[in-house]
Image (cartoon, rainbow, N blue to C red):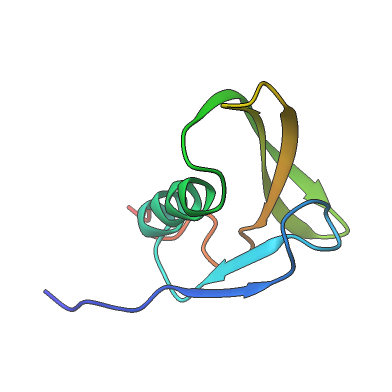
Length: 89
């Protein structure tokens, strides 16, 4: 088994323009990394909704979260690099 380092780049995650970009991974690794990043940034949270959005030819995972302090936020990940990888048949 080969371990890879998932690459994290981009902005702060609070808009499409500033989405956190996750790359150099499979789809499963990428989604797992999204939840790691959210937990690192916000601690405990409740996932309200998760949606996949295509914007200007790039794929985004958009997470609507309820934080421990009651705030509701939307958080953006650019998943173009890994979207669909690892599910080839």
